[in-house]
Image 1 (cartoon, rainbow, N blue to C red):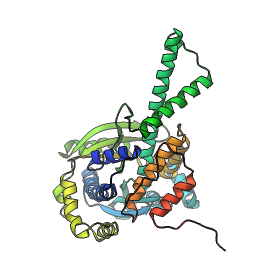
Image 2 (cartoon, one colour; image 1 turned 90 degrees about the horizontal axis):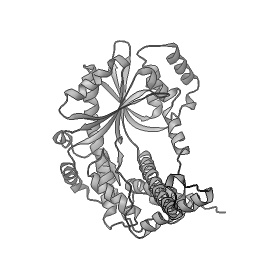
Image 3 (cartoon, rainbow, N blue to C red; image 1 turned 45 degrees about the vertical axis):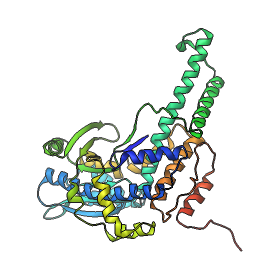
Image 4 (cartoon, rainbow, N blue to C red; image 1 turned 120 degrees about the vertical axis):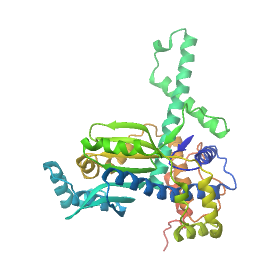
Length: 399
């Protein structure tokens, strides 16, 4: 199923998602999902800070200044206010932003860290780090599962067409199918998959579904300086470049996946903070034991994690936040372009949203899963499910 490669205990998370898809929750899943989400978020926040400082200081040397950014507005402001140079295009973008800031999704939650180089007259923005938010992680997990489910259905429908061609004595590529026949075969294949889910029969997804970008940083470097970023990773004993993908077009950058081996002793040298202990207690767990359990969680987990590193020059960074390829616009387009939109696809989305929201809710008992992939639901029902997670009463008209 899904490997979230920025997390620890990935196999347990993969197993939990798979079991929930087949409607096979366990009594201890409420506690398990709490640890998997919250302990991993603590772990990521700590190793991502160490990794970011290593990268930015390795590239630039000297003292760094970091600043928390709860919303995208703080990041976009910093990009405009801390320009290392100006061109007609960057000045045009900056003027548009200053004149119409409300058009640029400033309220988007970010919860990231910005990194600057202090200079005599101003700070220079050199990059940022962020952990993918729960909503975005749920959405991305669902999209990966939906895409691969769609492919599995199409493969089965193709096999049905191949059998039909064989019965007719013609090669598969010579088979002419009318739209009604193709639709019948697709719906039959979809019903077969739903029946497999309902009866706990394995579904062939052909390959593992991988998410590498829960933890990520953006590095601002001019094109001729790109090798300085690679040199940091190539010199480091705890980093390996496992993927390098250039993006060309509206969005120009290089996407790197780095396998990073965090220093667990350094990460565990600090106790859990009061906010995490309070959350643990609210979920019905023992805060006195939480520190020991976090240590056990980290030491028994995988040695390495994957981090996404996006390297772009300053102008392309501006384009991605306030220019021709604004990140939030790309998210909207992704949602609109989803090819497979059946009730099954929506149910996968609902289940992932419920899973991650349950982990951050005050509930400590799971009970029956509210979403079964073979059922049909209106969004209104899911709205009620999510409201109940946070003890928000249903909306009713009263006199």
